[in-house]
Amino acid sequence: MADGLPNNLHSQPHQLESTMSHKQELIRLFHSIATTNWDAAKKSATAIAAAEEERGHHVLASQLRSSLATHPPSATHGDLFSKSSTERPFTSTAISALNAPTPLSSVFLPRKLRDGMEAIISEHRHKDILFANGLNPRRHLLIHGPPGCGKSMAARAIATELGLPVYVVRLDAIVGAYLGQTASRLRELFSFAEASNCVLLIDEIDALGRSRGDLRDIGELDRVTISLMQELEHSNPRGLVVATSNVASTLDSALLRRFDTIFEFKSPSREGLTSFISHESLKRDIKLNPNTRRRALQSKSYADALRIIDNTQRETLLRKVQS
Image (cartoon, rainbow, N blue to C red; front, side, top):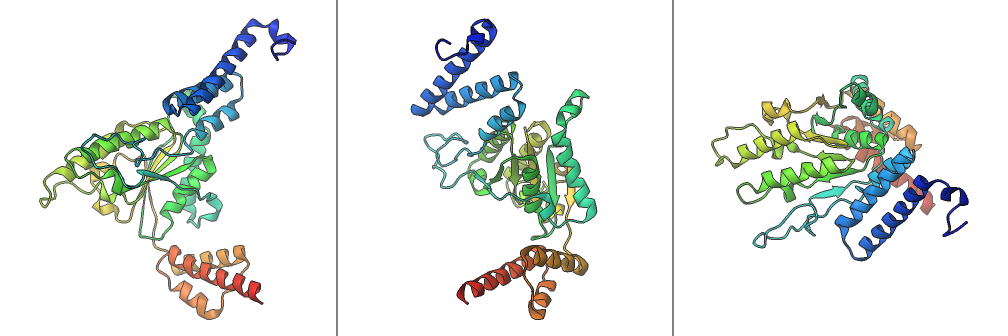
């Protein structure tokens, strides 16, 4: 053995060259981190993931690539969005990591919606088969329905099932005060989705994509809607872009056509609430008294019912601690 390498590698020039190249890439990666050269660090990390892929370590390569998107760029530090010297610095991040693993089994959905979500998950799990036959998995989804019906939770569940991070778009950091600023930021946002294997969640997309032709504005919102349509049509995200809307009727009809699939969530029926409350109570091993159950059944959404159940669980746990 020489230089810390097994003897058999010296008789295999290709493997030796590959191993030395891998070592050099690791050295470059550590040097880039030490000098805070993040572009170079990402380049080295990408090369290391590609090398592992070539060695047949497909799962490891996938995990390495996904980890590059674990920490979202910060608009505050100018990592995601460029800033001119005359532009006021951002005071909040443009996207926020949402660390809330949610298996699809924990999301209360009607059978039809659950089947639709499972189909999306299956497409991305087996996307290599689709690619081999000239097809792509669906990547642009819209989930609409009244507040509190589980739209964002469903997006998190898709990400959890696929092992992808979730980033929530901060609309206050996207919408700019100057002409053309918002469209430029949208381009950078979708470029991020193309570079990062993640679920990009645009909550309440109504703020960006409302129907065009409103005479009360000067045309800037129309331009934003058009820019959003163009990004949805031409972008090729590595993972998924999921948008939610409380009132889909306010969205531009041409924008709706840019989504691969549209899921409609409805307010829960009394039967649905009854099943949901029973499911959550059993899962948490708590018993609701008649008055609490009645209040939960009068909820207008699953989120409202869940708050009542959460409060009951807190009270139950604290009583046990204090007794």
